[in-house]
Length: 198
Image (tube, rainbow, N blue to C red):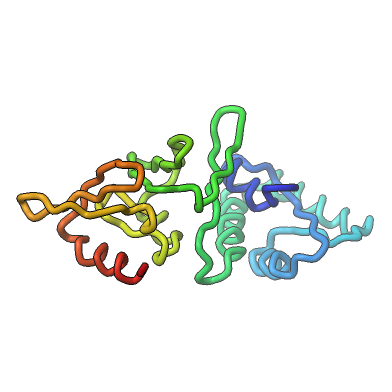
């Protein structure tokens, strides 16, 4: 599956809309451990007829029982377990009607909150992604991105200058010329991030 693995498919489709799924893997020991811990079935290649039958029986039991909500929670826990502790987000999987778009985090200049969504500003276009700003901030590399406002996160390397305003606020000017507001409460954090970035 070039460009998107099985877990990327789950993120793209959405846990709540995923059918009962049996994963097949040739070598991913992390996936095997995660599936064992969360009791979601998998098959290891080469697949035997006996093991396939067990997986199908388990899938039928989930479909026939009232276990759908429990299955969704297990899949969500599995996705969390698949990202090693401390590993930061490397791509956004964006669902829209009839397509799934992969946006590398490296392409994003700044991020703007928009209710339950965020707008990912890249040089090419603005992508709308369903994610809360607070969750997103935790998954971004803090040495690469800094929050400048409750509704704005910026790639540190894209900041060209800070312009003081008369009321003590600042404008953050990006390399593109875009001007964004810097919250007074986050000013020291932004200055520290700029100093650390060298």
